[in-house]
Length: 311
Image (cartoon, rainbow, N blue to C red; front, side, top):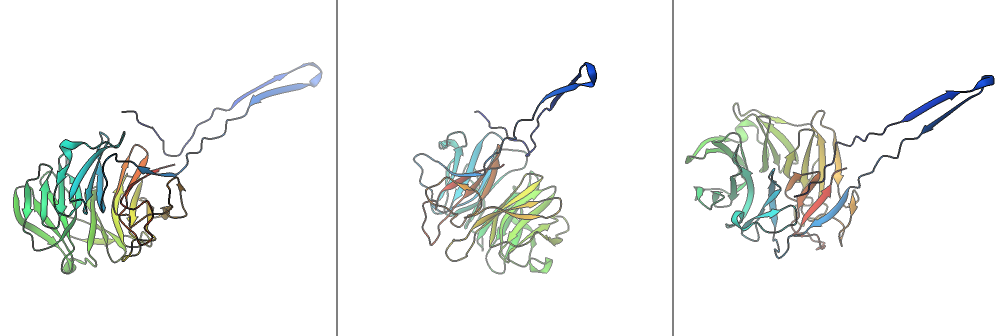
């Protein structure tokens, strides 16, 4: 697989300078000017999945080996695609009712996925079944412990272990949880959660202390992916029709928030312009992948995976 290597936006040029002198006090010099810096366009294209029509793709994750796993709720499938050419990787594609969240078990390539009826392993085995709730995103904090967002009732985040179907702990309103948890991601020992009350929070899984992050405005935030420098967040947009979605990028060091891609930000190379209820995000090899659901405008980007080149 050929990788496109993109740096962090720094480009290097050598400036060659020379000088010389002649008799009679005259002097001359010659030099070569630096070449113009290469500009990487923030292109937005369709990530093609030949022969596979997705329905309501939700949360996603990418592997270090170049695979993209997508929970497609409307298709009742967890798909895995090769990012090199979009072909379906059949051994890692599973049938499950209403899948939404996906996560790697820490330290492995084993995929766990959350659906309305429970949590399952890549092979289809039920880890948690017949739950009295509606599970959405999930994340591992160790090789044994994982957390699942429950969007039923008042909204909770429930801790489980891989060895038991019994809840080990719960994070809820008594801890300061103020909205329904959508996506969950673990970074540097903390859980980052997107909430339906338009904010992102950081949770200490040991103490259960919830810290609202001063990351600015969001519009129904959903999927989150963090590369160490930035956090990318999918904003679903209007809750009832999926229009007006966009992607935020937040600088981890100071919380600076920018619109990274939207109807008007980015070089759209698709038939239609704009997102349709974006839900999941994943990073691989200089590209951000975004799962699109449906929207009232019904543009041709709905139920597709978009691929955004990161300048």
